[in-house]
Image (tube, helix red, strand yellow):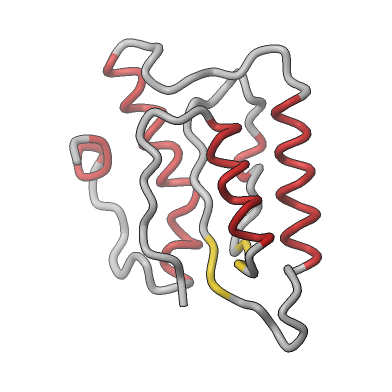
Length: 127
């Protein structure tokens, strides 16, 4: 099962990662790298995580997911500047939202969260 959408609004990327870490510690599994797109914290204000419930046979957190999310949180916490959402002109914010979706589009499709390709820029950013 993939978690229902949990929209964190204008939360900083590091806060999204910390929420993801809490879910991983509760038995959720990351389905994509939390550092997808290879952006530095000062280069992308948005961070999307895709997780699914997976306690496995031991009921313990998924070790690979825990390692990935811990590394991501540490990377963001050690950054001197994190680009916050909402701090740029609206058209630039829309560009960043679009990149966030497009970078994860294949993962969304792979897990049945997106059944058709993203058709247009406005389909993503004007929602």
